[in-house]
Length: 138
Image 1 (cartoon, one colour):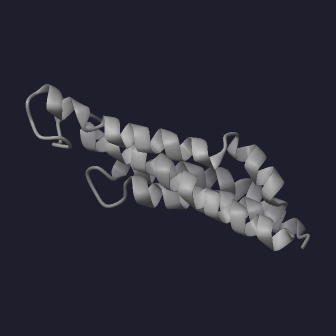
Image 2: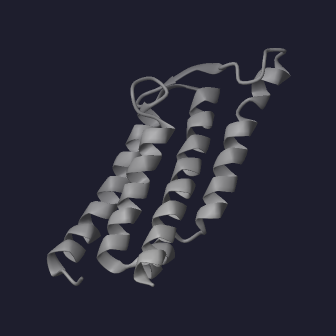
């Protein structure tokens, strides 16, 4: 299906959706949002790209294979628990810095965990979307 309107809208909506996904990621460790919701919004941007331009273009725009995002996200999420072990706390105990940043607030291990979840959700969701779209084209 070829639609000039959809392709034009996708060209402008995709960067906005990715920016909003990043905003949700950073907002999430203090307020509602976070890695899961941000990852879903980012994956929805690529789903829109699949609908508009096809799987081949969406894969090219994603730059890396979805499996790479899954591995990266899972690694970051698991590593986020290690700082707690270094200060004799239980694994995944949240630790925060004393400094406050203007938009983000206090930085801590929950943000690192959220970043891991963000990449993991992008990887899993885009893998599902790409696989279903490829099967549909056959």
